[in-house]
Length: 423
Image (tube, rainbow, N blue to C red):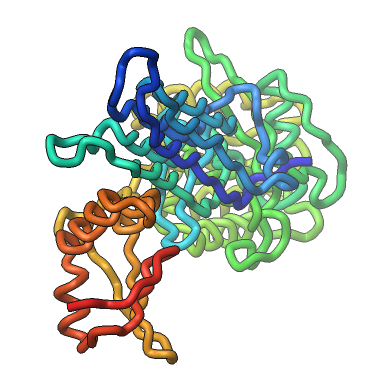
């Protein structure tokens, strides 16, 4: 099954906690703190895979979590860094932030991309030893890894896109210009998924995509084309295949205008791409006036028209030679530039704390950096409590509590700590 959109949640690993440990060795009294640091959490890495052509793998598995770093150990042994979690994507997949819709990465431009960074490991108690605090019984917890909800959107990497109404001969044309073998039959919507083929003209090779037939209203979700218009986004050149014979009572000029209208409604930029009209089925024309009207109409817009018959290969070589010549002068395949800014808190906000008051009158203090600073404090250790008080003072917690009208004896809650306020 061809799947070209998916949504997944990724979470990088958390850093390992620092260790609280003291040197133990015979004949070495008071060896001092020797707790090691925790390891770094695993990153989430996206890797472009040229052998993948669909996002089917992400239809059933939608959550990817990297391993956490190992905690530190005694004897100043650091915990191991967690290995990265690699997610393979088809080349050409555009990764967007689900919440904002901004482009994070275009995997046509990267072989690998770090989507979410793992958390840093916490410090062991050896870092907190000072001349006046020689036996710290606390360490620093590891930080959390980044977590994102992202949208994956596969946009085929093709130099040329074949567009047009159903049953106008796009698949037949692809089959005669390349080694691709798409399903061909005389009914609407034979092509259900985009097909790719490699075309060689002289020393030049280029990729052609057969896009499932568009119909009126495709840009609003009608028919199959709505699901696959995104695959024309990257095409440097569009071959608009038109049924010049007017089979089934169709008018080539009306078909030409209708498809161009759908392209414009989907994307004005896409509608402005270079285009060549392939007037197909010229071997079955019963009314030459239809072809002449199409040629005259396209000439008014400066669009070249090539008379071809994909079934008999008439005019196909001349069309491909012209396509190769135009591609040589056109810019490379479109790459979507990243608009995503990884959140980095300024220093002033890094120590921001939020204090709220519960219905029972207790003051609740919260803050990401504050949690990391006090997470492994030992409330039964005097030096640990002194360290915690200094941290609260540095973060401005006491000043904010005073501003909120805290009184002596009021309860203050800081995560797993609860104590009575004393002025």
